[in-house]
Image 1 (spheres, helix red, strand yellow):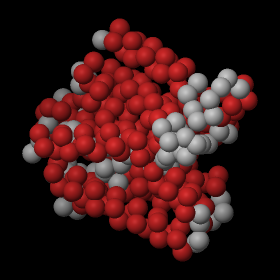
Image 2 (spheres, helix red, strand yellow):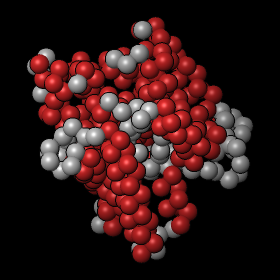
Image 3 (cartoon, one colour):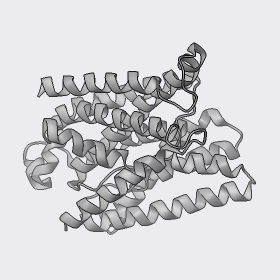
Image 4 (cartoon, one colour):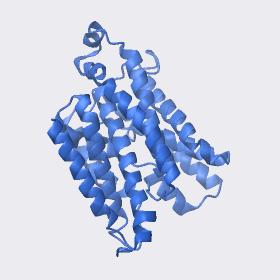
Length: 309
């Protein structure tokens, strides 16, 4: 298993090197490579990896192969936080507010799927969870669009935000994303054994000494940080958290201790490749990277849905 994870890391490194030299402008201009391409690749690694880890954890604690931050409305909730930070003229608050609203959106979806009777992170009904998550995602996205429309924001900027982009090239913000995401990933790996017991059912987990509600709440909070960081820097990018964990499971199995780092590498590679395609396929026009991930991820979502009740 360790060798497979290492191979995925090596594959990611190769993908990143190739992506640096792919783009609409072509050539080997050091200015382009250092100031534009490298930051995009670095941001793609941290955002793609964070979304993939979030999806892997959600799929585990909910025992649902369709769960991911985008489908559950958590990513759209984070977008509300970014919009609110802009409305307040306090962009520096975007990561914090995106985390808060990501968590609140997830809490609402969990509570609604549980019938509002088992607390904000009770045991939700699997099918109901996805339906409520999709509805919440549509509603929150509509609210964000309304905000941008009322405040007369640039339509192109709105599209790039709602479908995601990796245009942020401030190294300080990228470094902040790394510093915020790394402890969350580490804590999730450290708690992997306890989270794996969720797959056995709540009653069995309790008999093994696991505080199910507390672990679920802590995991959701860490996932909300990862989602909030990603959305605050790259906008709303869908389906990375759905597709990447399933790819990683093929290589390392379902255990979170190995799945989390492997999903990180798979998600990072997925987003870096998608971004290279987004800025190259119709050059000089650049697509939002979320368009590419959706074209791949949405059919996969339908495929999984058709195979699971």
